[in-house]
Length: 353
Image 1 (spheres, rainbow, N blue to C red):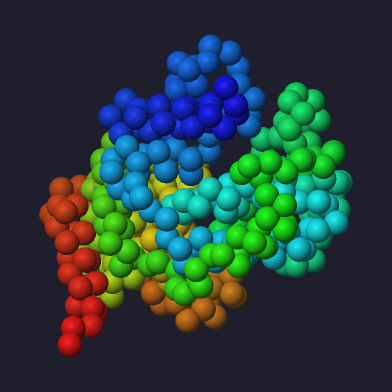
Image 2: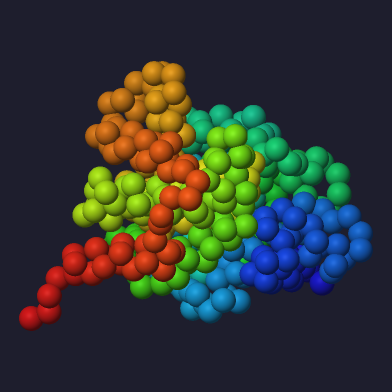
């Protein structure tokens, strides 16, 4: 069985465990699935990422099972082609969603390159791409395909750069720069990334929000109880302030979805899971909400955030997050919250004729 086949099997089993409520976070589901499928310690490249498990969750639940958005795929391929040109001297090979063609929330670009990790990182930083070493790395031993180091960054799409000591050969699913250029020419013209008005978006939002009912927050800072109840309180407070602002209300409702995915990095994992289903403004509000919360507590705020055109919006989100922690507060149901936001989306649809 190839590494890719094993990754897919583990991802599918982990997705089943999550959807059935047998496990509550991705890490535990992945480990349990791996132990069940292979009773030995697995290498890093044999273990699926959170994004791969999320794709299997979508497929198993029937949501986005045929999702192959051409505009987003085209944008991803164009960016991957730019990266391969930037790293040309390191003989890059491209894989991941770029070659597979299925673009879903959290889909990432994967590049295998050959050279010294410091040189690769310096080249990326010269293009203002702040790649950081991954916490986990295989070292030089193990499988012939095992990277010596892994760099990660996010620039519109999450990117993983695997640095090897030798050139990785091209093969199906692992493209050269020429292969990618051909795919770019054949891809439909990229228009606008799908946003929260994607027809399946609200089904995905519900899937990400429902597990929050099983996430118990710190009782000292969140006496109200579980994370879903908190999110609905924040939504209600946001609706009182901005009943017309769809992007802001989505940020209120979705700001804590990452707690059910990776509690150690809830903001980043939530943003990755939401992917292109939310607009840039909603993403910014969710990303900066912890910084704005710190400002409310201490008065300290980065100058870049203070100068942002969305500064007042993210402060309002932080206030709603701070105040949405009341035990016994009356809130709407999750379906009612999603329906209310969907109704705002429908109001912006242009009438036919």
